[in-house]
Length: 418
Image 1 (cartoon, helix red, strand yellow):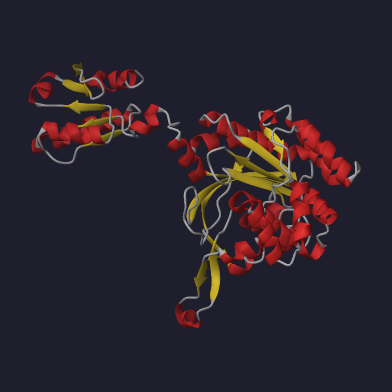
Image 2 (image 1 turned 180 degrees about the horizontal axis):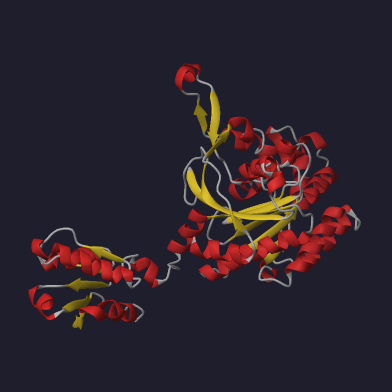
């Protein structure tokens, strides 16, 4: 989370937090029919409890609450507002690997500009995050809602069914081409039309963005504004860390109904689903404000990143070891005050210090520290106390040294990096 936060701040995004719940009217109707089913509703309370009605809901994402904030505080925000938000969201979903009912989203959003540089800025920021975390094999998938609508129309899907078709297409990585075709059929889209759609949306493996854009020009016309927008984004992205990770994927739909333009998603090979995604949503703020405001955002899923990093053993040794750097042992009850004083001295020197709570045998105290992956223990017995010393035991090597008490913290600070 520290890496995410620092990276977002380097790109000029400022922090924002919103309440865990919103008025239910704020959330309903913003995520499409699939999203509405996953919203956790909060029943009315007090004298209205027996009604069974809901007036509040836990937030489904961080984007709609942001849109509400923009509308509410429009006159107090700068012309171009860039914010980041790292908070939990809730979805009434079926838990699975990388899928949770409560999880953290790490969002960045830019409000007030239609420039394609906004999308590029955000893709570069999330690319920098993943590169710093040690990822090298991720792909940034890019598409455009306008391209999707154009391809659907060209395949024979009527405008009234575009929303249904996109909901089905968004499930392609979960249910496969046959599953999408069946879902098209259940939504009243003929099989022949579904086949044409899937053919148009396919992208040959390894195809370069320039080649995909050239094919789009042949299918939609070279003057298609959505294709032109994709061309500009890919051209600008070449100057950033996102450039060589970028692929145009015509299958990418992003099921949320508020997207209006470019849509993005970031994936790795060994995870079904994405590490994050986003897109442009120029109409969402207008639902609260009464006029449209340009907006674009990208969200990383913290837990999904942690799942992959854990399975790949990507965490540095210091992170895996634990947060406590040294544990002060308790020699006996009479030495408790002195143990507290030593811990305070070491904390004052910048170390992360814990104290063993009970005066048990040192062997038990060492075993406990080892179980928590604490690298050092500090021992102040009768002899150490009499001589103004502290014994520091390195549990990684078994080495133990008697150190002058005033130098103990510096000794641990120096040794912890070895």
